[in-house]
Image (tube, rainbow, N blue to C red; front, side):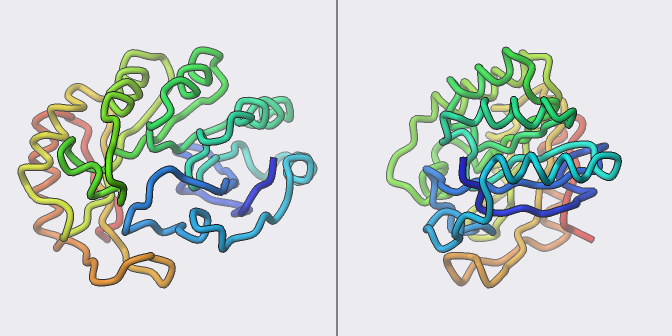
Length: 230
């Protein structure tokens, strides 16, 4: 498998674990606020293959404990379980980031206990999903199925939403809250503009707005926290 990026060490991407982050190319969404759009549009060229990654991991024994796999959308790659298996064979724990649009592959990964942690994006409430994902249509049943897999399974997980002023408002978090009611944890991430964002004229909510959204979400998910509001 071709890998499109490697962050050699992170204390943030894998909760409770010193890790590296592996970036896979390609995604079925075109979110206008995406921080990694160069992985989506083909701008970012592969930097290594899986054999080179394994060699790197072998060299980092005792320095890192896990590998976070992100994208793009990792579950677009049917050989993702094979990559995860190779990483686990080196003794590392694995965290997976996903948009939840491939529940069949997610189920396979969860059922075999291949990952210790999953972070799934909840882009918005159902009626705003296509707009927020930058596509014409969404099969929202796939999102619901992935939510259920995580909430009814044994793997540690979190749901998270990147909050953008132009895309989110208070009533959206009532609907998202109903969608993930009773979840273990939910994070609201404040949008941050970067040069790699594909569309301009997007802005971050104020600190007060983020606080209001979190209070709404806590009615449904007690463990709701903010990220990126420091």
